[in-house]
Amino acid sequence: MALYWLSDEASAAIEPHLPGNQPGARRVDDRRVISGIVHVLKVSCRWSDCPADYGPSTTIYNRFNRWSRRGFWLQLLVALVDAGVVTRSTAIDSTYIKAQCAAFGAKGGARSRRSVARAADGRPKSTHSSMSSAIPMP
Image (cartoon, rainbow, N blue to C red; front, side):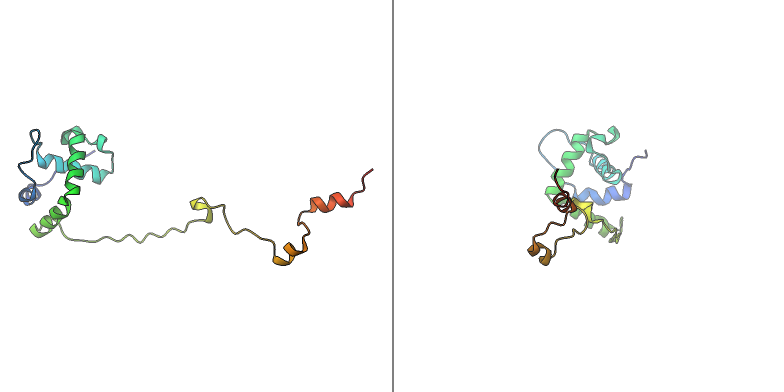
């Protein structure tokens, strides 16, 4: 599987927007972590399955979540569009799939109900009860 790496121009466009002077342990290379985040999102794998080339998977996951809460990703995308690194685009998926009646756990299909006239008549629809009264008992 090919690994994704940010280009030099993308990294240069992102650099001024990265949070700095954060407390805690020594900071892992931002370019490597962002490349890992993009790889996980692009490949749709679990965070724990992120290749070790990007650094510890917990660091990649934690940085993604922390930056998401701060709104960093939206600011980053705007910066990349302004720098001309990526284009602003919108994709609309118009996939239409007709689902069957029972697709979402329904009992399936239309049920036939007794008409009001039959319900008022009181006679059962079943032949079992009418047959048992027609057969003489010995």
